[in-house]
Image 1 (tube, rainbow, N blue to C red):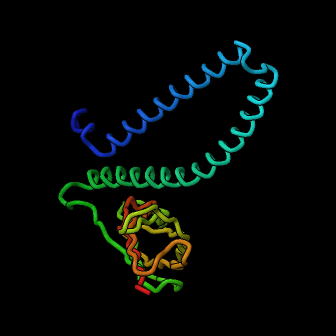
Image 2 (cartoon, one colour):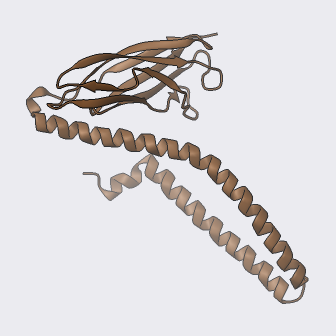
Image 3 (cartoon, rainbow, N blue to C red):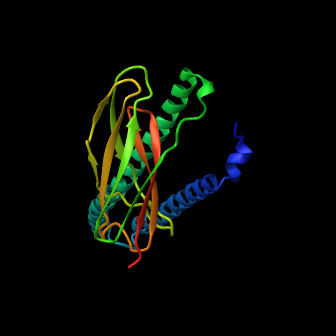
Length: 215
């Protein structure tokens, strides 16, 4: 079990603490500036009516910009949160499933799939999906965001999965094909991207790798 001391030494914890400190300092600074502006208006150094109208107009304009930028930011953040929740949930289900089937079978299979192609082409790969459960399951592949090996923001291209959904009986297997257009909007020539594919219904996750040929 991770202790509080261990958590605080983690880079993610340090980043969170720094962001929290920055947010508090920003709010304190804005509060002081607002208090100074209020005192100036009350002393009569500024026209109170004009100041009131200017304040309301500024709040209205700032609110519109705030919600527009928040919506844009929220869409990217929400997709990352959904992907993280899904990966975490399937990891828990996989561990529980392995435990119920007995520890003698060893750890869950961690397969991988790689798609390779030139920029602008369509990369393809095949994956064999199995239902390890004792009951029939509806199985679906859901590729997650891809992160470039050279650093930078994750990309969320549209994969084509065929068939999009499977009905598998106990221990039944079936092949699924993945297609991905390596467009310039999401990919860079010579770059390698990594991510994961959640196999919903089979409680499995596959390592995903996309390699774009050099120009």
